[in-house]
Structures are given as structure tokens and as C-alpha cells.
Image 1 (cartoon, rainbow, N blue to C red):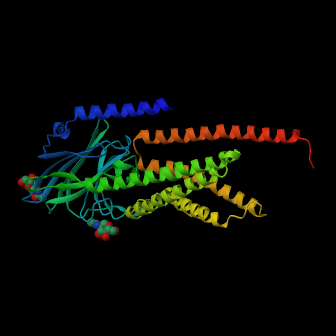
Image 2 (cartoon, rainbow, N blue to C red):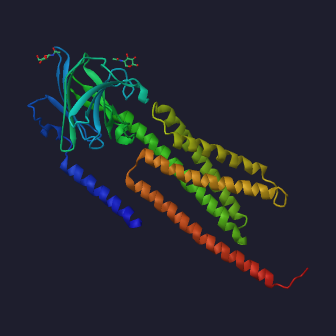
Image 3 (cartoon, rainbow, N blue to C red):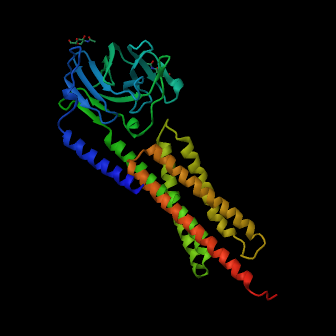
Length: 386
Ligand SMILES: *[C@@H]1O[C@H](CO)[C@@H](O)[C@H](O)[C@H]1NC(C)=O
Ligand SMILES: *[C@@H]1O[C@H](CO)[C@@H](O)[C@H](O)[C@H]1NC(C)=O
């Protein structure tokens, strides 16, 4: 496993080096793209996500914008879409042009008014502005969407997207990975610096927040809590580790809890900022984790004395909640990684770390059993002293 982790890091470095070598910042891929139908556009941009390109000509005299949008659909029978959002920056409010292959195999273009994120509010109807001369074609795994639209402002927010399939003329939901969510920007049509800018600052700070959230929670729920449990379960077998194991355990779990609360708060904040996109499972597990961990911390103050008759029940309760946190914490770290979709080596690093902890636990489990069994047999050989 370690070598596959190293290999993926190496592959990443090589692919980074190759892409920086073959695409110097100032040469655009789009400027080498041409169109079969002799269409010419005055401007083009390599869009920053989903391997997409936009070509356009703006005629300010009559406010007509002619565009060609090029992208590979998520699957060969999928769809590609380009939209102008006159009222916001994301998908909600997007006036959308969508190109797909219909059941007869011919390319078709439809317009959708997307008022919010739910499927019911994606309605095939006329857009808020005039649209004409729509056409689409496909070749080499890439779809091309052509259209002319009336735009009265010098700058528009645009959104683009690719999806996996179309059934009965209705597009299936697209993925919600990083590149899908970052597929938006601003298109400047007039003036000297006409071009595209992406809302990189906003997107970057969002990504940064998500990364911080991910690191805090992976360290807390995914690492410190399990280590704390290992300490409690295995160190206490050794009489010489008493009471050190207890303080180590408490230290581990209290710091895990503190970091976890910070991570949890960033998650709730992220959830409230992400309108329309809800990761129900991840969110619910997160809330459950926070609640039972809080309970666990407070249960410390209710701990009966060692020889109290209820101490056994308290122990059973404390241990089961502890193992529940262990399982849910690790599950939620993986769920979170699926959402955040970080570079592969982060996931493999985490898997390796958990596997190593699991290996240590397994080894200590064996040692504990040996120690306990030895202790028992040495006790039973002792003369009975009544
Ligand atoms: C705008 O002007 C261009 C060039 O003169 C012309 O081709 C196009 O049809 C006009 N569009 C509209 C909406 O009048
Ligand atoms: C798009 O849908 C919203 C919500 O149903 C509606 O308010 C709006 O008028 C529609 N826009 C167009 C251009 O039909």
C-alpha cells in the first residue's frame, strides 16, 4: 500500500510537470480550435474547469452575443450546458442552453429556466432573453453548442456544466464534485479587457475553508479519538502504566473533542453557505457525532467510583458510545473525502494511517490476551490462601 501511495504522488508530480510544460500560461488551447461550419469568433477562453472552452463574438451595436461552447459530456450519451445567470452567480437563476444527443442520435438544443436546485424548478421554457440560431454537434467525444443571445449588459455571470445522461429530453443530475461546483465565472463583453474571469477568489477561499474543515475533522474524529481509544484499551493492561494511561486517554479525547468542535463548527458554517447543495448523510452523521461526543465528555463527571455497584453499567455505556464514535468518525471522514474529492494521495495517506493504527490495535489485542491469560494461569497455580 505504501508503494501505491508513493506511486500516485509520483504520478501526480509527473502529470503536473507535463501540464505546465505543454500549456504555458499565455497560450490558449481554444485559439487553436476551429469550427467545421466556417464560424469565426473574435474571442475565446479556456474555461477553468470541466475541460471546457468558450468562443464568442459580441456585437454591441445590437447587443447580440454569438457563442460556441465546447465540452466533453460526463458520459457519451450525456449533456453539456452553458448558461447566463442574470440574477446571481451559481445555478439558481441560470438561463440555460443545453445540448444533448436525442434518441435518434441527432444533436439537439433545449433551453431551460432553472429557478432553484430542485428538479421541479428546472423547466424547459423560453429564457429571460432572446435566443436564436441554436445548433449542436458532436465529434471525438466532445459536444459543441452554438447559439446567439441578446445581452444588454457589458458583463454577464456565466455557468457551465456537463452531465451523464438525458431521458425523455430531461437532463439527469450532474455530479457535485469540485470541478462541477467551480464551473462559473464572469464574462466581460465590452471594453478593452474583454475576457473571462472566474470567481477564483471566492472559489479559492471556499476550497480553503473546506480543506481546513477536512483537516480538523480528519485529525480529530479520524485520528485522535481512535488513538485515545487504543490507549485506554491496551495500556491499562500494564500495571506500571496506571494511572498514566488514564491521563493520556483523557488528554487525547479532550483535545480530539476540542478540535472536533472547531471542525464541526466549520462544517455547519459550510453547510449554511452552500445553498441548494446538501450532503445529507455527511451532515447528519456529523451532527450525531457531535451530540454523542458531547454526551461522552459530560459522562466523565457522572462516573461512579471504581467499586460502586453502577460502575459496571457506566463502563458498558462509556465503551459502547466510544466505539460508536470510532466507527461513525471514520465513516464520516471517508464521506467527507468523497465530497471534497482531494488529490488521491490524501485519501491513501489516511487509509494507510488507519490501517497502521488497526495493525497496532490488533497486535496489542494479542499481547493483552497473552498477558491476561498468563496472569490467570499464574494465579491458578498459586496455593489457595483462603
Ligand atoms: C446584429 O448585427 C449583426 C451584424 O451586423 C447581424 O449579423 C445580426 O443579425 C444582428 N442581430 C440582431 C439581433 O439584429
Ligand atoms: C423562470 O422561472 C421562475 C420561477 O418559476 C419565474 O419566476 C421566471 O419568470 C421564469 N423566467 C422566465 C424567463 O420564464
